[in-house]
Image (cartoon, rainbow, N blue to C red; front, side, top):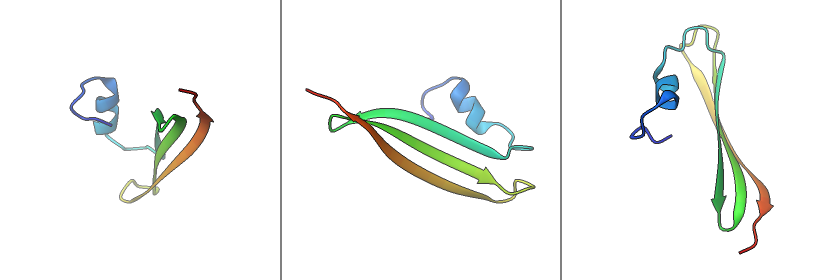
Length: 65
């Protein structure tokens, strides 16, 4: 996420995490003529004092030039 860009997405990431179990950001990006799904996930423990972050990239389709 580019925090220099303003809007509801920035606010969502800066909001209170009380009661949050999981956050996920999905980005669709074209790189090297490939459409990719990039996923970043944060899973919180029961009291939000710790978390585990993961990320994945899934190639979806090769785009012709």
